[in-house]
Image (cartoon, rainbow, N blue to C red; front, side, top):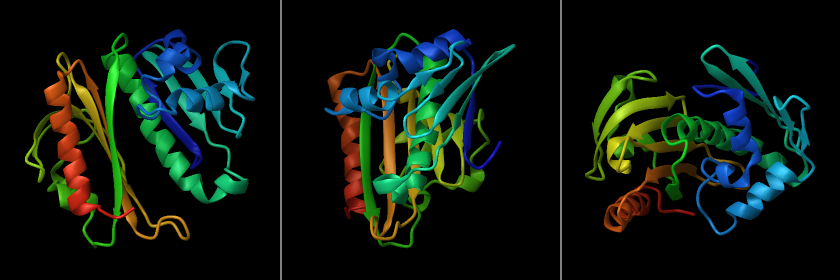
Length: 238
C-alpha cells in the first residue's frame, strides 16, 4: 500500500459498504461527528463533483480522492487513494489524511458492530505546549497495549475505567472499542495526536471522537464531561 493510500478490511459485502458511501443518512453514521454542519459537509464531499464507477466499486471525489471497493471472500477491502490537497487546503493535507484514517475506521465499526444503529458522538480537541504526549496525559502505556483485536483494560487519568478490544492503532492514533459506550455491544473511542503545523497550529494538538449507542442522557453527559474536563486540563489552548 502506498503512502497516499488508506485501507481497511470490512466484514461486510461491497453492496453494504457502497450504501454507507452513497446514502446520506448512512454516511452520517460514520463520517466525522455530529454537528450542525454535518449534513452540508456530507452533501459537499459526497455529492458535489463526484463520479460513481459503473460497477459501484469506485467513487471519484472532487478533490481527487478515490474510494475503491474490492470484494474478498470474507468481506470487502475499502481503499482510499488520497488526492493531494491544493490551494487553500494544501497546508491541511496531512490533517485531512489523518481525518480520513479515523473516518474509515468509524465506517468499519458502524458496519461491523452497529449496522442498524444510530450513533451519538462526543468530540473534543485542543492544543498544549507541554512536552507530555496525549498517551502520557491519559496514563496509557502504549507499550503494554495489545495489537489490533486484542483485549485491553485501562484506568485513565480521567478516572474512567475502559474495557474492550483494540480496534486499530498507529503512531498517532488509537482506536478502542468501549463496553460502557453502548447499551448493547460496544462503542468506539478514537484518540489522535496532532503535530504542530506552521502558521496554523502553533502547538501540538489532540482529538477525541467517541461514538456511543443507546446510552441514557446521564451516561452520555458524564462521558462528555470527562473528555471536556480532560481537554481543559491537559490541552487547554486553541
